[in-house]
Image (tube, one colour):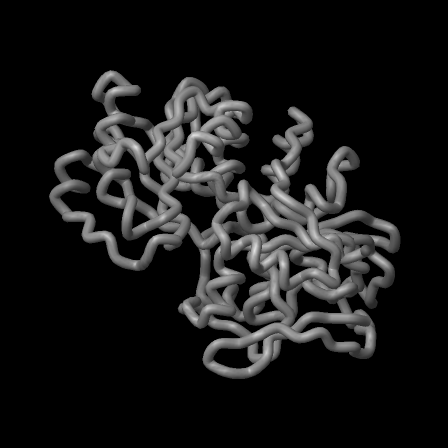
Length: 337
């Protein structure tokens, strides 16, 4: 099999390796990888800026999809020929997050999807709806499940509520699509008029260009008649969290899912207290959330928005595309080609 692995060092690089193909053990399945996709944290690892645990010389990428080619003893949740993906945390099936789930995190502490074969414990696998291609399915495990969880973490998303999303990355666009499935109104901020067009095409009711309107929090309040949105999915962290609080109604929810602009932010406690805000962070989600997302998507036949697809040999170009910040939603590696 061919795999891409991190090199050792404070700031790792990537290298192709030819390796022996895995043999599935008890409760394991061997999957021929068809596609894999990147998230912000994958680039953060290469830049030496990811604070979470990682496996030395591991195979990157928590997101992918493929076909089962072999099963180990005792496997009951899959058979040869099944089309599947997997939850990012191999053994987090349901319930709240626990520290031990981080010990088996795909693409972080356990070998991930940037290889032509991957070995998975059956606890993690999810069956794919027939209408989704492998490229589309590969975009879902981290960003889409995070978006689903973010919108339902503190309280269930309700039809008619208003949701604020930020940017055009994977989590933001999936949050837009999930919110629209629920019949919610979506407002958005972005950095360009071109990206604003894409957001509106996907269902955003109004979009604020934060490069032109610096006080975008006030603009969002104006769009809600001064009340604020019901739910905010905060992507950037440092540069957005204060205005996220100002944009959210009293008693509303803010879910922090990223740190693309930095780890600070300085949200004063009085802003939380005076507005009775619920501010929470999410560490992706258990398999149950992934399965719920797939059922909802299948009901509406929602298709992920894919920015660009690269062949396996051009995996470095995928990272460059992600780092450029010019992408919209997900960049994907077609591992089978």
